[in-house]
Image 1 (cartoon, rainbow, N blue to C red):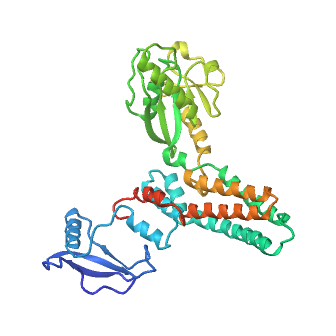
Image 2: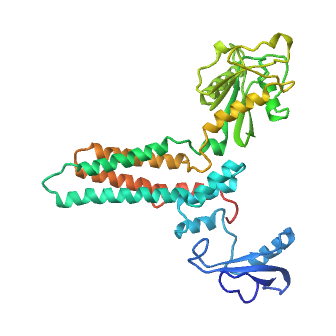
Image 3: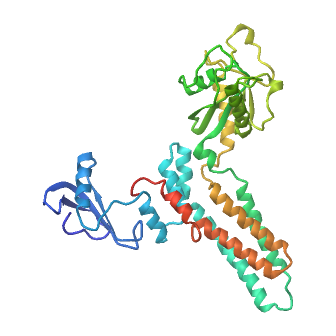
Length: 392
């Protein structure tokens, strides 16, 4: 394709030619990376050609014509990097999140994982866990007359378990990735759909004077002051004999229970009990609605009055659910493995038998191995690397 390769890690300008015909395809920068000091740990050659579709198609067609070459499967390069020890599973997950990031907060959180922030922290925990395991195994081998767990060993297990649980109590990554769930709820004709349209800046929901217009929930992903939000309009809550509307009302009640932030547009005494609830007094542009109940925020979807104040409160509540920009946050899989390790450490320091404690510590080490992808993760790997773009 390009004649003599440049030296490793040195860019060289080369003519790319079709090996079958000798046709000039492009002038490109060519870089050579020798394994194991490459992205995947294998020998790699990179073509930096011009980005026009015709140029790229011609280069790919020429490569396909070379015996033994094929296009990489989605995620294959990253999977090879993982298999060759260039990245661990947490870094690969961070890279997948980085590719999918749509907000600045998502980008920063994903980059912290992709650059090995969690891997380094896990390494510190594993060092302490190995030392505890070594202490337990040594006690089994040499303290034959005393099978009780040494107080120092129990204290070390308890301290590490407490640290893991402190990390588990921090905000998780899901609200940052999927959006904080902000649910608009209230009785029919309260102005829920109008409020959603006003916030979204678009006619996303049908608005009529007929009660029960919204039969199912409507979701709108957006960002409020840089915070990813999934704004949801729900069916009006009331007693109904309409079968379809009844299903919508049941879904609305389930969404209220699952909401991260609840915007309630009904009478304040009727508001559901929710830890992050904002009472909204809608339609304040109408003469008979000017008086706002105590504790409620007056809003008009028609004039925009009160929207800025309301969105500011939503942003504050939503931001409190997100990890800090410089913090490492767990996803569900990572949190599950950390929780299992903490449970095993709890068992290690609560038991009075050093043999049982040693086995519990082995279980904790297995949880960390699954966390980093060292063992028993084939189904997880298939799901993860399938998220990547072609080749990456």
